[in-house]
Length: 112
Length: 114
Image 1 (tube, each protein chain N blue to C red):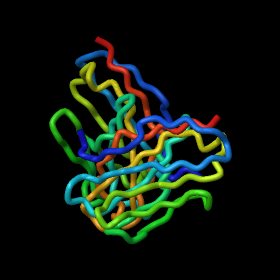
Image 2 (image 1 turned 135 degrees about the vertical axis):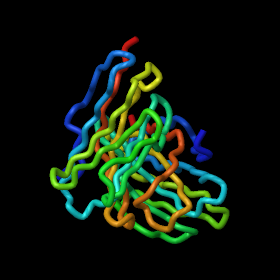
Image 3 (image 1 turned 90 degrees about the horizontal axis):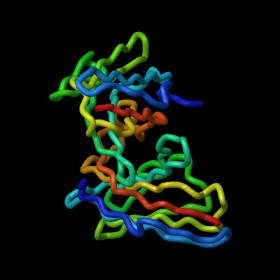
Image 4 (image 1 turned 180 degrees about the horizontal axis):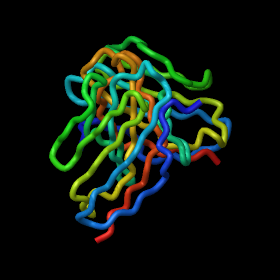
């Protein structure tokens, strides 16, 4: 049973436009959420996180939105750059004490 | 560069064999986590060690075992290998005692079982 779902395996966006990556979760105990970016032949790199007490967290071009009632979060990248092309993983934990549960990832391609 | 190192980068071995994957965490990090990423799958948590002690176990097979040494490096031992064990194995580290926060990943070891 997948507790963290990224339903879009891939996404293609033009350079300069907004990229929106989505993630849904089923476990209502999850209260901390993270996004990781992964380039080929490298390990995942932490990007941004959000606690359930917030509904938005921003870091430069990256913003994560959390909708607790819908059990949904999204990562917005504005403006998108070719260097953003990578696989993005959503992850979640409960009270910070449980191991991270990862989605299967979304491959983002930013076209120049 | 995350500061987490993993060796070897690639490993090719036959079914039934045993291999050891090695991980050195970032300087100062006491927690080490192991993950498996199979084709088209997300990262599956295997096991978490904190300062030499096992803290949490995920869906780790009985054929797999791990340990963390006094110098904080960790090894993941995979035995009686099967074709389905072919995957990317990642190690991550963090300064925290619990595993639900930011972790810093190594580049991974790609294991191919033939």
